[in-house]
Length: 111
Length: 111
Image 1 (cartoon, chains in turn cyan, brown):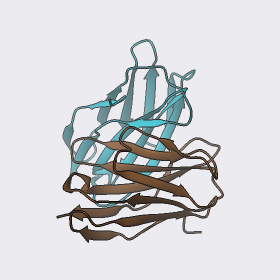
Image 2: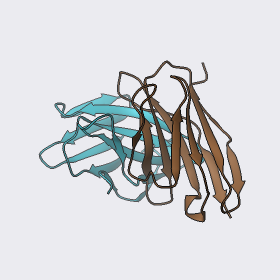
Image 3: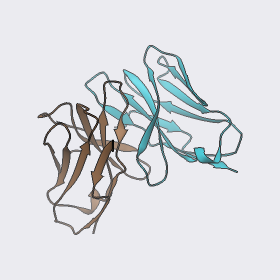
């Protein structure tokens, strides 16, 4: 069964707007990561947040983690057309180096 | 520095045929993974290898075998391909920093 579930499944916004994606998971985690996938390409790591962290920033990305609610959010500020991609959350369980991915959010940024 | 290299990029098989997907990484990472990606389902772990000489089953191992030939290479074999194995296959490797590095994927169609 899948650990992470992203919400929404698809999101369409205008360039310059902010995009927020959410991820929920079911069990204990070591860390939670967000990945980006352009169409037809492999996944690229964006940001990692550990279970003892609450918020992390990287450029235009802001990730929050609420372990009590077993949820995370990814905020992309001032979005660009080049941000159009699918975004996946992945959780690393404490039981070995096992990463579980959600089904992803498809983001479309319209120019 | 090529990162994670997968071959072949595309393959069409008939039901019952066998094939091996090759994966190599040049980053000296200990752990390597094979995932499959199907529409709407995110990535599902097939097998992983925490170190040379060890392999472990993931969420969907049935119909697959793996070999961790050395630290660089981790191959995935389909002994008797089935249409249900039509998918995009991704290999990934893991450094000590905790984020996965992915290849560009191998797109397999089983007729």
